[in-house]
Image 1 (cartoon, rainbow, N blue to C red):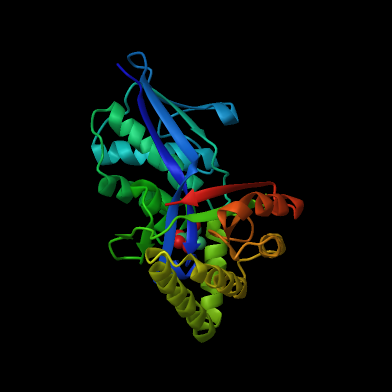
Image 2 (spheres, helix red, strand yellow):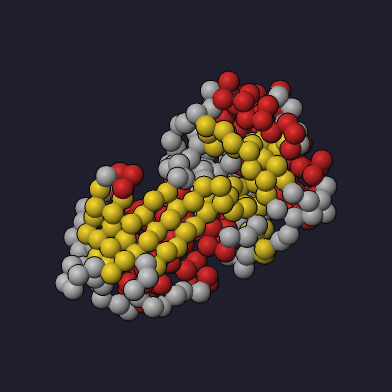
Amino acid sequence: MQPARAHAPGKLILFGEHAVVHHRPAIAVPLPAVQARAEAIPAEFGAGLTVHIPDANRTLRVTGELDREDPLYNALIYPLELALDALNEAIPDLEITIRSNIPVASGLGSGAALATALIRALALALGHPLSNDALNTLVYKVEKRHHGNPSGIDNTVIVYERPVYFVRGSPPAPFTLGAPLTLVVGDTGVNSPTHLAVADVARLYEREPDRIASIFDRIGEIACQARAAIEGGNIAALGPLMDENHALLRDLTVSSPELDALCAAARAAGASGAKLSGGGRGGNMIALVAPEAAPAVAEALRAAGATASFATTIG
Ligand code: MEV
């Protein structure tokens, strides 16, 4: 039997993170430059299901008895248990190896990508390939376990692997880019679990409903304006929208000194706009650049403290 192989990309939120949890629109794109990859091979009769994680030098068995406080259980075993249940299958005799170069807790969708690749590989190996809709439902359940109140944007963009204009509770609207976008991604190197930032924003909203609702509203308008600009190929309009979106995220308390410093460094090096991307408080930021400015902006980000930076073209 051939190995069953599956992969899933990372993701970038271009506009609208956090406000999207509260039903305002947001825009996200897949980031194939980073990937999670899973490979399932048959194991001996009675061996059960094991997951090898070479990067962590660990092997886990799916027995239903793992420590549920273990982050690796939540990230890797829970998705498989959920999928077996949905497929109405007993624990199979398989060995799955999972590898990922998506940094964890840094806004690039690592959790959703791991779950997507694992469930796809498992379903393929069992001879029940899943539709994207069915897979998306499962990965959303995994996201709920990871961070309590996810909007669903991460699993959607990662499972469908298409740019998406997303409003929580509505069917995702794929859209096409009128012109390619060149972005430089910079990593603060600070891990920041999304659920903590999402919970803090919810508390802020409870304390100051009017002020925070108007910030969410403006972020939603920015996402709408950005969608029109992206579809129309009006890239010049996007930089100022990114800067404004970043300032509003700072008002929501989800930026950090490191993110602010990297955004400022990118602008000073010629980016036309920059913002944090994802949950914030750390993780990654993105800068919009002309293709020829990308190397200088990537270098400026590293000089300003980014632990990694790379350019990517979307569309
Ligand atoms: C995380 O990638 C994006 C957030 O808006 C959370 C969510 O939408 O679930 C911060």
